[in-house]
Length: 304
Ligand code: PMP
Image (cartoon, rainbow, N blue to C red):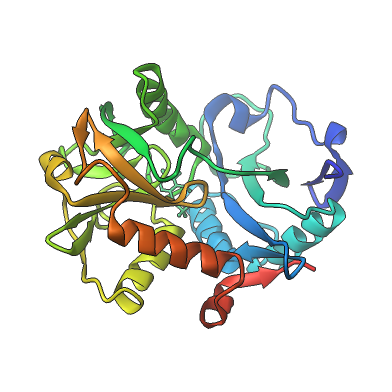
């Protein structure tokens, strides 16, 4: 790891990638970001970036919602990420964080007509939870931001105060994760992951209109459930108590991959251990992201 960051059009040492305290995004949260993972395959001596194009498509959408003009095309952004990974000589699992933000130093809350900046940094990254097969969750007392307040669909910096409040509440109570309901009282998602439950052998996940982030892992997992495991997937509202009686619950996301929720508010999910479907899905998922499943190699971009 060489500590090189892409900042305002250049690859610079970390010490040079700095912003002023007057920065609009620092004051008002007016930035958008992405979280992308790259997986190291020791045998192949290759680093694979997962769903690079899909992440930058969502990045573009987030920018659009926040009136941020992106000076790069999707292809250019992808190239910059690959170059950055090579410059940092990374040969391990990595988290990639692109950020586009309002860099104006003027006071005032408008979004239009402001200068913006782009930065991308990369960090070595392992497991998100202490144990991805044994996540203990609570239903948060915080509600998910709604589309007419702060759009959950845009991955915007300020909205993560909502995620941070929910996650912190769970951690302070001695749990690993928060499941957040939307203002309608239905299950939206976890603090920074989408959620699926299994009931009567069917996989159910909230629809994109439930104030969720439209997760890229969620999309991949829906297709794996249907096409590889022959499991029906329903996108519909989920009631809180459906969590308690589900056979299995798992969460999906760039950081958490596919992780098993084995307890919610002290109630065991199924027999309190990772379920069969979640286990199969995890095996399938890790085979794909580490570049060991040719059929899904279209999801990966090799770095070296
Ligand atoms: N919801 C929220 C609020 C998130 O922050 C994330 C992580 N990006 C997700 C869901 C999962 O999305 P993805 O699979 O695209 O990482």
